[in-house]
Every structure is written in C-alpha cells, then in structure tokens.
Amino acid sequence: MKRLKQFENWFNKKFGWFFTNGNKQQLPLVLQKGIEVFGTMEKFDEWMCKPNYMCGGKMPRSLTQEEVMNHLTAIEHGDNA
Image 1 (cartoon, rainbow, N blue to C red):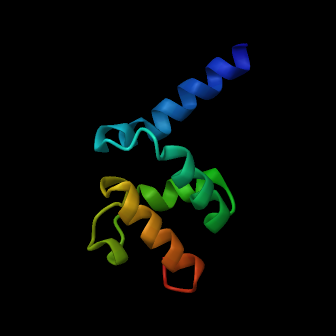
Image 2: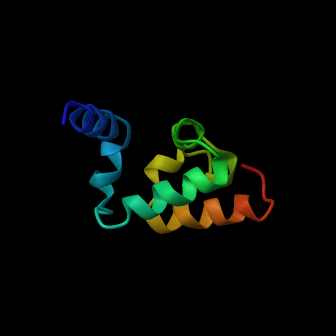
C-alpha cells in the first residue's frame, strides 16, 4: 500500500501537468507510447520537459495529447527527437 502511494505521488509530480490540458483519459496511452519510443519513463520525461525544435521550440508537455502522439510516432519512424 505504501509503494502504491509513493508511485501515485511520483506520478502526479511528474505528469500532473498533463491533466491541465484536458487529457485525463489519454495519459496512459501517451505514457505507454513514450516508454516504447524512449525505452524508459525517465528518458520520456526528459524529452517531454525540454524545448524541442520539432515542437516549434515548445516543450512537448505543453502540447495536446494528439500532438504528442504524432511526434512520438514520427520519432518512432525515424524523425529526429
């Protein structure tokens, strides 16, 4: 039970921002895809929190779920991160 609470706290701290974009139903899909593309949650989180030229100089975390999924698919198919 304590481990679950620790995970929930970590998850909310790292990804709570996503809920402000109205994407409550889609976060697990984005996390799954991000981990598939980057290999770890830490690498995905790092990518999400850095300004990126593919995202018009914005941090991917400021984009909508659909935009993030499109960028992840592009990276998966060989476009630059």
